[in-house]
Each structure stands twice: as C-alpha cells, then as structure tokens.
Length: 102
Image 1: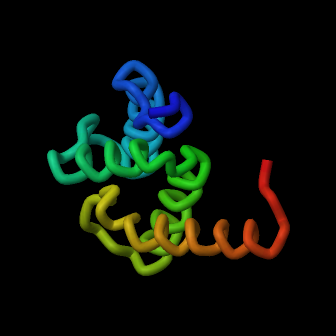
Image 2: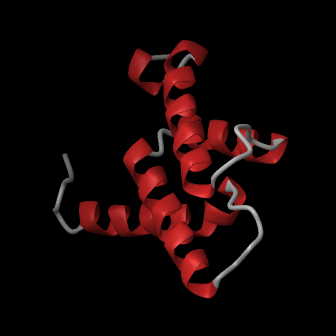
C-alpha cells in the first residue's frame, strides 16, 4: 500500500483527537472525557481523514443551535454526526464544481 493510502497512525491521530476532545469539552463545559461511542466516532472520522476544522465547525454549529433551543442535555460528538455529514457533502459538492479548497 502507498503511504498516502494508508490509515493514519495512532501517533498522528493522538494530537488531532486531543484537539477535538479539548474543543468539545470547552464548548459543552465540564466532563473532560468522551464516551466510548464518541471516542470511536472520533477515531472513525480521523481514520477517514475528515478535516479537523470541519469537525470543529460542526461542533460550533450544533452548539449554537442547541443554545438557541435551550437544550440542556450534554453536547456529544454523536449529536454532531449529522452536521459533519452535511459539511462533508457541501465540501464534496464544492470540490466537484471545481472549487478546490486549500
């Protein structure tokens, strides 16, 4: 397998996962850990090379929507799954239209 086609190594994923975990904790306040389901979802996204800025922007959009609706349950990555999917679709549509993102 070519190096660019291989899954990222654990060493490559750790700082990225920590960045996203810390951001989510800051956005939701408290609970400095991820559930097992959220941890697996995060690893799946990173293995699939979902860009970190896209995940963070999705967390922001979901958090803002939840604040507006005054949702009191804890913000999770699972709650952001749909927003990440939408953002990936938008990115793919822009890329296929010839607008390559940096």
